[in-house]
Image 1 (cartoon, rainbow, N blue to C red):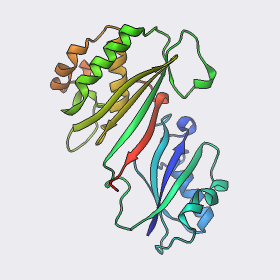
Image 2: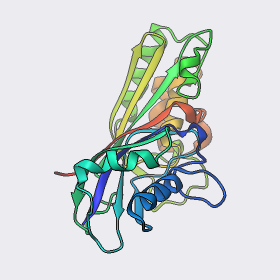
Image 3: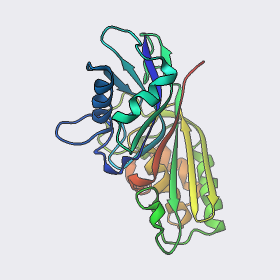
Length: 251
């Protein structure tokens, strides 16, 4: 048996989630925290890799002790490990899963949220938490983004919306949800898919922002997808607005 937990972290002061030598990473912090708690090095596996500056609100991870035991009841584990974690990382919602469970391979899909702060002046409360975008996006621009988002839904080859040079077996993914919501000065993008390519969400957001600005029309989106040409899509939105929000598993 092993533990399955939900994970939150603020990515601002991490060099990504995957462990790397000589730099601070989310996995490195978790490895040290669970070793301090259990007195032995554990196998800590995360559901996803995120870049420097990217955040998580509902990521998942498993923790397996070498002997396969669960010395602390799962419901008590988040509180037990909390003193060993820095303020920018927290775990919650722990449960027990069998050894055969894999936190990445058994995931049926993920949801990312991207926040864009659309105002002529900065708000310090959103610094490093949202993309500060001072150019006005009016109601018409918002509607153009929603129209363009509709063209992205479904199963497509998303090679045009992937960072170049990313080795994957296939660039076909199924986009199950793409919502564009305005909440005052915040524009919130909610993106759900069975899987994501490298920088896919950030390129989707950057492309939709260029649609709002009138540099790309909503009607061009199908042709951009069909071209599989990264240069035809929009910019890559900066990392600080991106949050891994949920991971879906079959019950």
